[in-house]
Length: 339
Ligand code: FES
Ligand SMILES: [Fe+2]
Image (cartoon, rainbow, N blue to C red; front, side, top):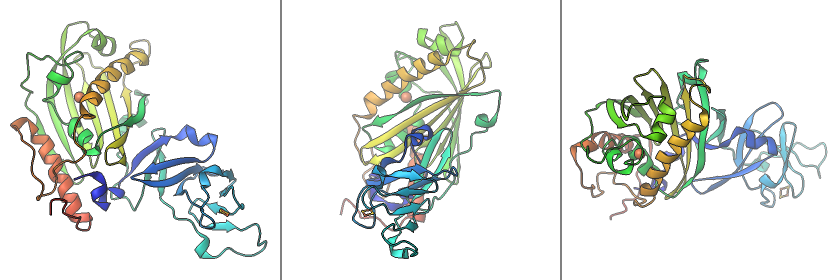
């Protein structure tokens, strides 16, 4: 299944762009092929509207924000944050008809990003207690397009078996390919996996763990929320907590936005943010290199031929089962690609 095969994936929040970008004016954004304009009104409301004026189809993202409305660049019609047409300047004193409204999507800001959903979201944006805890600092790391399926990134979040191979130059050790045991639990829209993972601590690792030994362990609690959001809470033996938050945004079936930031309970003097970013940059590029080679479709539905497996794929398999249940419960039946 590809992410565009089921409309249910329109009902989740996805990161669109840094909140600060909207200070420059209305911005175009495309999610699962739908073109929208993102903007923020003078009262601080975030809005996502179809990027096409209902009058003569000009792009509203070329327009401008005027207080609580966005003005179309072509004939000056104005729309509020909910998409209602507030003014047709050529008809002063006349209330615009409902037919002049523009389609609206869902938009809100969280963790420094604007998030959007195409239809009524099934769940809220995941809450991160560390983001409200003053003993943690938030370090923005990456926000960039990757050429892969959203589901392949989700798979990778819970894949302990790839570390020895893909991350052999950072935290992995290719002579130790058997992953540690993990405890996996499920909840409504996600799963949690707990494990203690021995890792190599090479130079780039020493820079962000503040541990000088060549090996260490990560106490790891990974939480996945459908379809592609993950919190990876790592605690090192010296008490440093490195909490990685990653969100995938489906731009198309084989193109995503990869967004990642981390929260740490140490200080800039102990570990400079640049070192934490340098470590996670190397690791994420190792993943990207492999993931961009994988297929756009992932067997999730019962009629799709499963991929070959091994016991270490258990968390991945549970994730695919949750995705299947979400499609079956909340989405109308989808076309059976194989038939
Ligand atoms: S096209 Fe937008 S006001 Fe005419
Ligand atoms: Fe990885």
